[in-house]
Image (cartoon, rainbow, N blue to C red; front, side):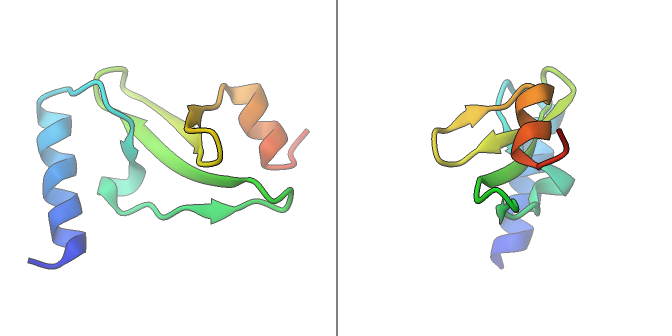
Length: 75
């Protein structure tokens, strides 16, 4: 099984179980990216909370909206 199918299957299982995990968003296919400010982020989804957020990969911390906007250079 290729990696994308495996990630998608794991994502679907976590969502159906409403797991309290931060998973890569978009069906488990989201990839990390670097912002203009040099911050490495990953867009994630938590099935239990039903919420999307950005994960700062340098410190393994889920960003609140203000911190995410700052990291993205929007404020």
